[in-house]
Image (cartoon, rainbow, N blue to C red; front, side):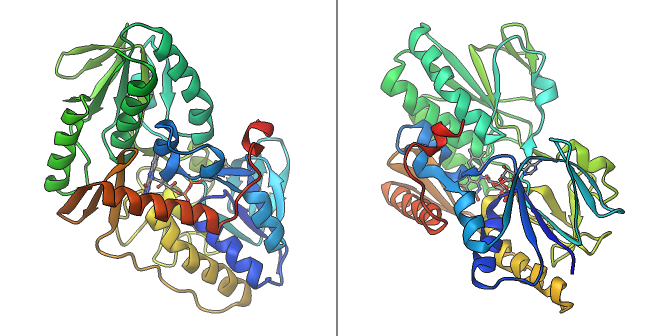
Length: 376
Ligand SMILES: Cc1cc2nc3c(=O)[nH]c(=O)nc-3n(C[C@H](O)[C@H](O)[C@H](O)COP(=O)(O)OP(=O)(O)OC[C@H]3O[C@@H](n4cnc5c(N)ncnc54)[C@H](O)[C@@H]3O)c2cc1C
């Protein structure tokens, strides 16, 4: 069997690397990632709020690759030619594969509409770019009187980022304020109305202004479809997920939104030697929310299926649970737990989230403190 290529170091591939460390396949395996340090998104709001150091939120893919006997290629996939079974890297190299697995995450969607603002625009993804720029934004907030941050996109990430920013400002940038802007889909689309109502109350308690209306960039800030102008000193975009544009020319079957179309076993519906998991794919049988929890849970099934495909054995289905538990960090020491229409907010959900997140990062190996700064 020819080489197995793992593209991206997302949640599902962490599980694949863990399985490969226990069970070496009879194929050469390479992992292609632009960055050896994987920042765990679930802890980024806690880092913004000052609860974690960046080292505590980071997984070292070099350690995992070494343990798994996997060759690490530090570069970004720039194109896939699925019909010729090869990928092109941003650095110019071309890699052939017999089996390809994609866990590349997603990019921040909706940036085109916001890009016409003359104010600094910071997209939440890629996370490495966000964590590199956030300290500068915070430093500006500290020295700018009545600094106003607008977070556009009121899904789970937008709520967490707005709460974390508010907490960081309260500690260091007195007088700075935060507005959270939701699209027509409203606050926390996909979550039950009871959860959205509870979170809206919390936003009010934290003095985060919440407004609804599709936003476009304008001089001095944003213009909402309602006609309201919002002045901003900086804009953070948490505007949902977009697929990498280069997938369009890959020859792979894609969903209407441009994500890799996969079946229940996470194999491409057009190319059975290509698998995809996490944000980069869309199932053809069930609508999965773009949440790390699904990338995590699909990971062991993906690992099984890659080894099964190499051995010519049948693959398994990943069956998502009908309801998932979500834990939203609403400030350090406080979180909202939601399970369907049931929700509870307070310190206990925060302790639980903190425990789960720390354990997840620890399970995938810790790093020597300061490594993130040294590899920048
Ligand atoms: C602030 C924030 C908080 C969140 N909190 C939660 C939460 O608490 N719970 C939850 O379930 N979900 C949460 N999410 C959503 C969650 O982050 C995503 O659904 C999840 O990260 C998707 O995982 P993934 O495996 O698809 O990819 P990711 O974890 O995004 O990883 C993508 C990987 O691909 C690599 N990569 C990217 N481009 C390329 C390329 N061209 N070539 C090679 N490699 C590449 C990256 O370096 C990275 O290693 C949050 C999102 C954000 C932004």
